[in-house]
Image (tube, rainbow, N blue to C red; front, side, top):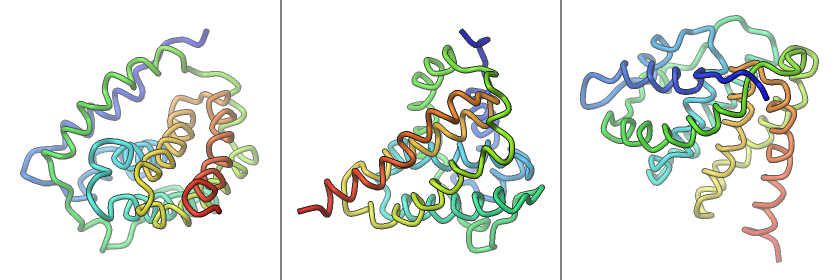
Length: 195
């Protein structure tokens, strides 16, 4: 079994400590987590869309845009995060964010018992290109998932799985994430739009 980690809970701790007003700007989240931490930012935004906050209209599409931009930058090898002003200026309700963080803590603590540094070579190039390509495809269909209840949360959970593997250097988890990352768009299309 992999050595136990608190890396995922630490990200939630950092995010919770950043909350101080009625709402928080995306730029403040980036500054708190670090502009070089693509994995942490991808994890946070995908978890926002997995949490009860996903009930807010447009949140799935917003998260899809953010994750798409992060993924493109990871593919091209950018060293620090860049997001356009219309995203960094957007504000998220602190109450909703804290509610989501609280909701996520228990499942993340459980998951942390099973993840740790394994097959670390899989979290580096060129091995990352395949899951990143799958995420690009998934983010392109996520805005349309708003019409299918919970589908956006399922897609975001698949992205969170990859981000958690990347953050904890768990190559086995990154490899496992390929299953939902490649299957979710197809399954949701069949369930939601298939005949």
